[in-house]
Image (cartoon, rainbow, N blue to C red; front, top):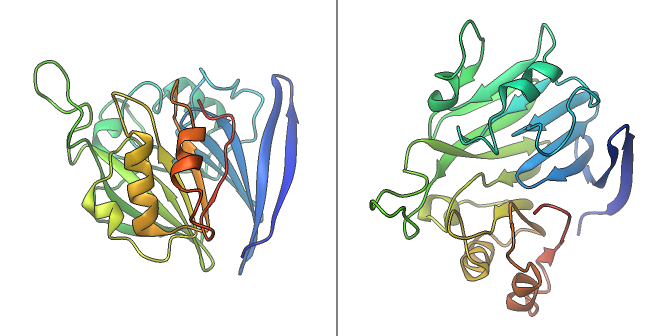
Length: 238
């Protein structure tokens, strides 16, 4: 079992809680900004995931070495937040639908099933989409091919960032996922039962439900209470 410790980062807007995981290449500190928004520190790297001003004042947060954006919805893609943390050498990874919203912008556009290694971090993009939950016109909230889930490799520790998705077969087929962030809110992503279904396929050592809105995360804890090798960690990620 990986060693976990708690920490916090003090900012002018308050505090961000975090967990620290020891990897084969150094400590990975994961900050829980809110909803689907995260910040990682890995050795000297600062990695922002789906940064948005609705979750934090990004003028007060550390500049990014790497930014990852899962898809184009406003609670995941926020150009103002991105501009606050850009440096001249910041690497940005996003989908084509995100990139289309910028002008004169440099980014690595990743499609489903593509792989990159950036700043020593392995990045694999997988489909994130709806099968069951759809809009009134019959269109899924997240059509297949528009959004990415990212599997990040920090040494031998693989972290899955689910983005907005349901329990799709492409994610359930992944192996060697040590930490999983899986979305859990209706009608846009998964029910607790759907998250449990993915977790039982992946069997991560640590599972974080995130993006969970008004869904009670304790329902997921109850569903997985007998799975002693899956630790469900509840954080402020409504």
